[in-house]
Length: 602
Image (cartoon, rainbow, N blue to C red; front, side, top):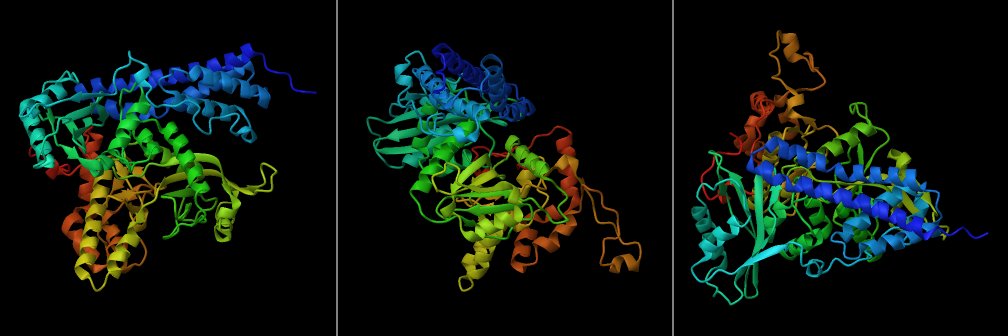
């Protein structure tokens, strides 16, 4: 007997309920993002961080609400595959003239996969590829705010045009001296253009909304002159007297890549048509995948969708095998990669050595903490996936054996579709950008041998960046826990980033102590720790034996970061954070600032 066809009215009702769920989500998401302006204007920095953290949870809450509504009103889950196909077709119809169709498709996938068994996860029932184009959406919506504004400076009028551009954002706090700042920016732009003749199309294109994160608001745009285009970003900050100033001018793709890095907190941006923002930003940063741009804008679920599509595309067009990732193996995470793909896959092991007093849930909690926390450019963002299927033939036997040994509960190998094509299914995995492990980066410097100057320069750069990374983490109230070189990586921009999260703690939860003075010769000569140690006691003096065995490394570290071995350094920052102080950690060096400012670490 053929399954009964779902009544069209009911199918439409399910689709409409899902669309209502998405529209509610994006309305709340956009409202919270738009409130960032008021928090910036009133210098509500703790409120800004709290809102950034809470907004991350919006999506899952709205998905849960939608699932509950569908189960209550339509007994969702009892329908056949044919009936869900009808629901999808009705939903596609609702996407016509929608301003966020790609986000709505992802929301449909999230709700559907919560209701249906994974055997239904096929092209017919979810959006494996986009059904509606996002090209030129705003051109068909004349009432929508333009994504960007264009300004055309006349010869000699660039400072005045920049003043008009900044005032166009309507910030309700006075600038310290906007004409002065505009002159600084105009000078920086002129220096970038050099002796190039200004062409008829000379213009500044600027995204219509400000980008808010922590204590900063960023104006983002590009300079166009003939065939020459230069991306730029202008950080707007509060000065000591509560007025505003443009702090610096960032130019070029590399500066923008650091600003939008995967190691930083998500921006808050009021966007009516997010795909148009992504398209504009991609024109400025062609090396940044669209998935990572969506992530940077706070649309992490869309980033996950695009990442997975990119991953499937890469699998189809490559033939190398997944392998155990190079480097020292972790005690709680099993890490593998695909050499041709710039990401690593991290699986929580089932078993940990005795010194690791932790659990799967605690480790997942640490990763969630990092996602919700200000990463200050020093902690890698991760994407969390469940039930990810890989072709079995792409896995080396050595890797399969490694997973079977250390994480058997996370592994399933089956012919899921009954077509003879075996699949490896990983039940829970984190995926993050691949970096060069810092211990390997240092070893490469040691191996340079004959070219000692180059090797020494690489060592100095790495060690200085390592210390800076720890200091930035301290500013964000994060104690890394395990500070070994192997737990840090070097990015393509030579930044050092931390990526081993199972032992992180808040600085304010740690007790930084000085090693007690031995009371007698027996204690002094003891090979064992003879003093009491609490579960969150930290003794910074004891870092040195594990980190500074190499004389070249030790010399650089002691020159630039000796204070990291002093308990007073940690205690001082803990006290300031506990008192409510928020350090300034911005995505550019202090020497890029227009005016002298106190050090980030005062």
